[in-house]
Image (cartoon, rainbow, N blue to C red; front, side):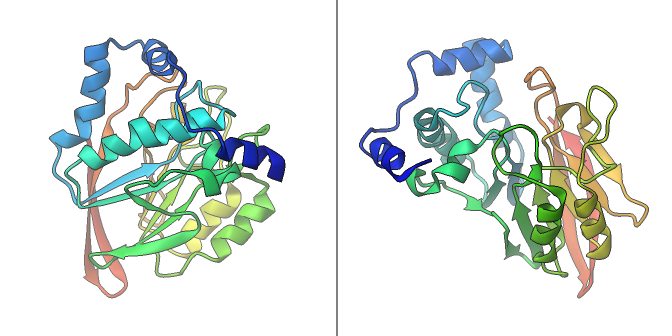
Length: 254
């Protein structure tokens, strides 16, 4: 985006087109009641940390930065603020163009946003990274060598990695039966002994995967390849048992 284009955007208030929310409901195949039920699902669970691993803007807002910023401000952020959760952590995904391309115009987000940085909560070390392997002109795309450089910066003591793009071989198989994850990320998980990696991006690969080292990769895609919200969330219990060890148990929860 050029400086002139950015200045023009700044003069116009963020707005969602009148029919956008209705379009999203139709795309999901949801009635108004079903949509509202979806928006309240996290309130039904008690947990300490909510993790969202990207793709926060729905289909229909791509490349329209004002629509995206209005979605974050008028739909996503009020939903975040309504949740009775102590800690909320997000990273972005390839659908989230505005945070990558016009970050200086983004509205406030009531969560900890991790883009190649970390946070410690109750002794557990989290690191967030929005990147995935390059595919057309989507947001937060990098080549393999660039992804490798990003994960070289991740601290060795990281316990939980929140990465939009999956590692190669774990939660990365498309509906064409092709593995499209990052080799560099797989190696980083092994080298740094990451206990839990929370990812998404490849919707048909939803599920929990265990590495040979006994660690876990969770592809937490809520929607399938048709953008229908059919998948459950993961409830993960992490406890530090020693300076270098963390125990993990998990279950699927609607």
